[in-house]
Length: 76
Image 1 (cartoon, helix red, strand yellow):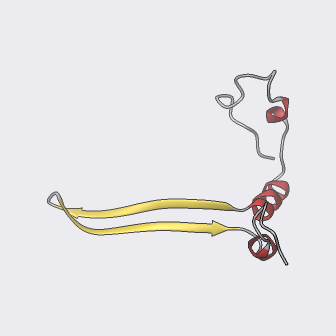
Image 2 (tube, one colour):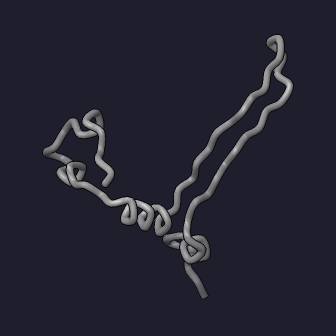
């Protein structure tokens, strides 16, 4: 089970669902259905000279989610 850290659960009157435990399977299902983008960057520096910069973007979602039209788009 995954628990939300106490730092996130500050105001319980607005979001009581934050106290709910979520299984890893349910969390993975939500990520695959909605999609998530993970970004990062790597910089290799020698003697304060940047030699290499790599920007990374990773899209995680199900194929069905990727192929669905965006909300509000009219399909023919």
